[in-house]
Length: 118
Image (cartoon, rainbow, N blue to C red; front, side, top):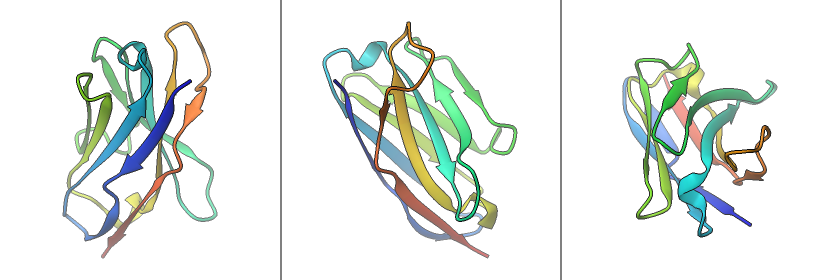
């Protein structure tokens, strides 16, 4: 069982940066793939980016070049560094984790709100 807790959200202005954290419990967390998703009001949840157990990352086109995902397995934490934020990045940001052999994300956090003002 893995529990995920996001933190780091807040209200910022366009062009600012934020770093979100996804802290996990669970002894096997370093072997998990962890993704970030976001959901804006009235919109469907969308994929933001992912990092696998080896540190390999992939990003949605909408955030590529602005957002960076990293992980610190000594602290069982995955980070989402968000630079050059835009109002359209406003959303509730979730992290999710899955074991290496699973296709679907088994564990989800409660989310942290990011609001970017113009």
